[in-house]
Image 1: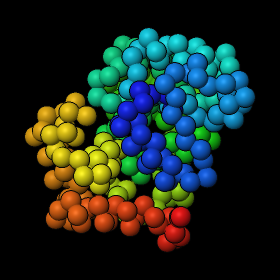
Image 2: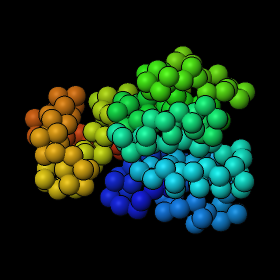
Image 3: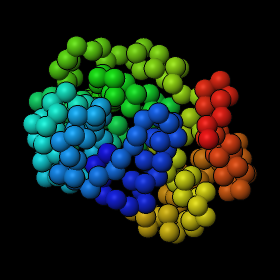
Image 4: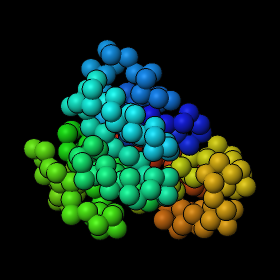
Length: 230
């Protein structure tokens, strides 16, 4: 993942590490930090919370160093303008877009699909961009495929119904971070953070932070079929 190295990217990396324990998740500040030897082992390059100029440079670097590597943008609200996204999709420069508003199970299934050489572009986003669809390269980008990957790789528990943004907030809650600090870190209003927390409690069927943290750590230790990860 190429991202600003802050608490938010660390939270996202931690979530990915827990759900893909056999895969090494590394956060770089720029594609220039990736060595030639490392490029040979990269399967998926995630771009998160970057300026459009940085995205342009990284996409170019990836096409030169490792053209077979899948590239996807983790979309956080309006961090990237629609016209630029439309250009990236239409030219086939990226293989996927992952809005943080996706449910966690769908988000993780899309990550798995992208790492295996597939593509993921939410239909609602393509409609907003007025793009019929990106060029397909040897893989089928279908809802049924996403669903089959989700069923095979994501443990069925209440954490899975959270959005990726809600998981970020839950991570911060588990670290004892107060609402005002969460709001500052995520560039949200405190009322928005409170609304997210209410949604988290409702989806997890808990009443407070302590219960949410307990459920989170309990579910994160359990893998498919109840297997415990150390």
